[in-house]
Length: 165
Image (cartoon, rainbow, N blue to C red; front, side, top):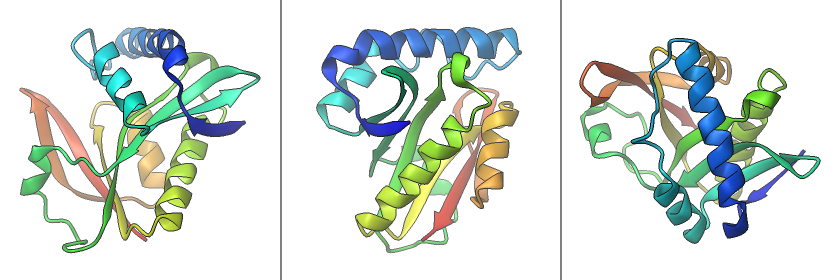
């Protein structure tokens, strides 16, 4: 598996991955994402900003993640440990259902940590929908600390995680 920046010509494959993942989540009772998020336009902007990374297995996109410094306004209410450092934010981690259970998400998160260390970030922040046991379990297993909760939509709570580097 190799991980590098996603290319504009891969947008259709990325959207197919997202559609399949959303369908699988909904079938499992996880209403984390839908037609409203994440959109094609969001991913095109991520590609344009060179912040969308794709994990590829035999030329197939197995998973994606966005790495940037943009934090949701909702994060302002969280008591973060890293008060003054350079913070990397992780967004839209998603694994193609065909490759789920094969460690792709863990490899993408290890890539994020390696990237953060190489580029001198002091911590990593992200959020995970509380009703998505796979993502919550992943971040817990990787040593991320829960720092609080946020809600992006009424009735949908996400844990905020931080890892000091």
